[in-house]
Amino acid sequence: MSEIPDGWSIEAADFINKLLQRKPANRLGLNGAQEVKQHIWVKDFQWEDLLNEKIEAGFIPPPKPPMKPKKMTQAQREKLEREKEEAEDLIYQESIQQIFEGYFFDVEQEKYQKLQEMRLEMVMNQEKKIDLDTE
Image (cartoon, rainbow, N blue to C red; front, side):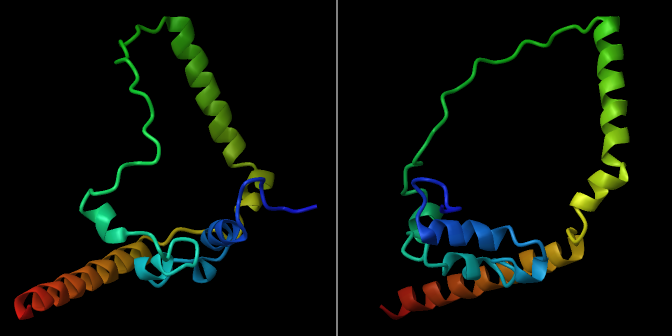
């Protein structure tokens, strides 16, 4: 019995599994966007065409009609408040917290990664400009 969903390639499953690693240090993309772009599942994707909006989306959801704001009754507000409190109580239970043990989000690491991606993009744009100037 395969653990790969029907219709998925081994490469697609590998891509998703590497993105969902528990430890951030093991995740695909830790070393920047280029690492993700070089994965076998997406390595032939035309990233420049995407950046330049030359690619049509594979799926465009149908537009939803605008929502009209509803007035809530006092009973609805009270029910919503109770549900919110129950959810907050649930999330702090030890058994729920244990599920997320080992996961974390480091905003400083995220900022550093974004900065590295911006630097790489600047270098690539500069190289692209030099190539155009030499033609």
